[in-house]
Length: 153
Image 1 (cartoon, helix red, strand yellow):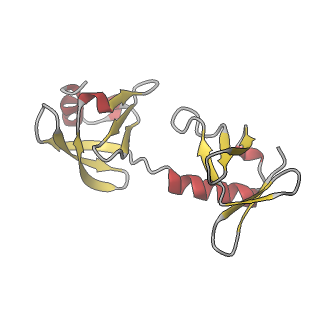
Image 2 (tube, rainbow, N blue to C red):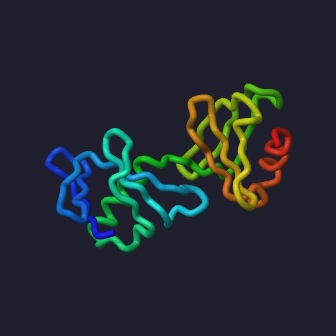
């Protein structure tokens, strides 16, 4: 698809489609943000309707690709858990103290159903506010972290 992206004077993302029509306030959404982040991006209008589909965002011009990457980074906040320091209880709800790629934090796990397995050895853990934390590979965690995590799996 032949599309271009730029920002308007207010900082909103603007899509110029193949017919030359400009759509203001576009929001990019990955189809598979965890399993295939480099493939399939939908460009949506303010009402959530799809304006364009990008099979491969890499096909965009470099300037458009940079804007797309910037927008997606703002939208997709998924800290990666590097170490579990402590959990308040082995029953839920429990408060977890963790080290992530973005620093140390604590969150509340409402229930064991908020821990989802991903392809391979990864996990996606949602806190009570809906913030998702990712564990890329459970086996890569230190022994203490694995032991704490095993109590919930």
